[in-house]
Image 1 (cartoon, helix red, strand yellow):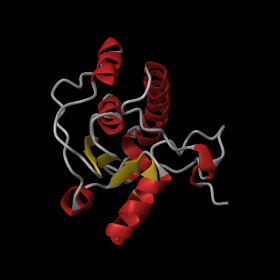
Image 2 (cartoon, one colour):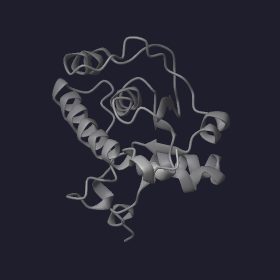
Image 3 (cartoon, helix red, strand yellow):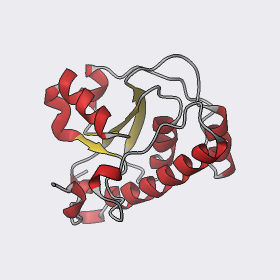
Image 4 (cartoon, one colour):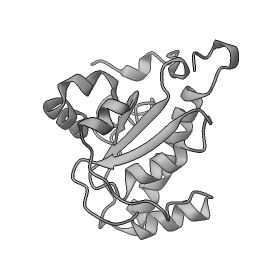
Length: 169
C-alpha cells in the first residue's frame, strides 16, 4: 500500500503558502487544526471549512481545550467548502480518507493537493491515520482528538517551516 509519509524528506516550505483545513462540520477538527497551524510559519495563511458545514462557532469543549493551550477559537464561524476555497489553497488537509475521496469525486482536479492531516503519524499504518470526529462524543474522545490534532499540527508546522534562503516564498 502506498504511504505518502514515506517520502519524509518532502520540503513543503517551497511550495505551500495557503492551506485549507477541511472536516465535516467545520466546528471541531478543522478550526482547531487551523488555529494550531497558524502558530507555525508566519508566511503561511490558514483557513478552514466543512464538507457539510452548518452555522455557528467552534465546539465548546474543544474551544476550551484550545484556550487552555493558548489557541483562540472564539472568532471562528463555520463555513462550507466550495470550489473557490479549494482553488485558492495550495494545500488542502482533510481529517479522513473518506473526506479526501469526497473531494476527489466532486472536484477531481483538487485531489493532487489534498492530503491527510494525520499523514505524518508514521507509527500507525496508513489505514489508521484518520482523525475521528469528536462531535457529540465523550470528553475522553474530545481530549484524544485534541491531542492527535496537536501532534499532527506540530508535524505539519515542522514540514512547512520556512527554510530561509532556500524558500521560494
